[in-house]
Length: 193
Image (tube, rainbow, N blue to C red; front, side, top):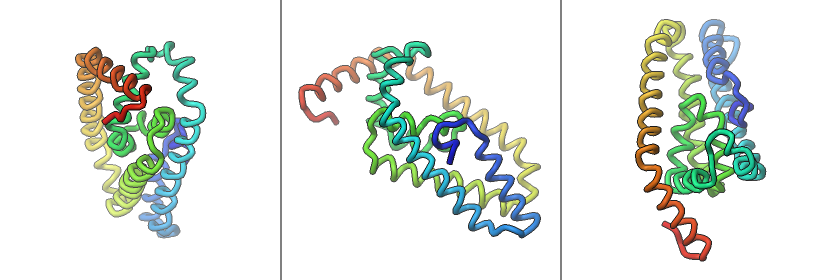
């Protein structure tokens, strides 16, 4: 829950360790471990969303320039989050760095709460439940698989993040212009697709 609120903590390690403990000792019931992990992930993201909604945008406006988030990029971020926010929330759950900040960003970008809740719940069930049950049923095989699978997932994540970064750099001017036009239409009260 704390990781999902925005604190960089090792939630995956905790879930996998608990599941392996269940598999090895049978002193804990894996279904309750999975339920606790899922509930913690979903609740933490909802608290993170509320924090982002209340304080996130002001903090980004005030301190965003220190990390390269100028006003135009903040407009672009809001635009992209509104168009693809559900995907970001769902898939962000599976990327360690993004998982910590996705709820805060969703709140800061005023993503509708019901949409956030839906994609957050799907992501939380898939991520926390998947890790807990997968680690439990694979048992000790997880330890031998975690090296190659971890390396493969790390490479895939790096490629996706790198490709996304290159796409945004290549298309930043065009996307920023689209975002600026959409923001101007929104200020005039027009509907923005």
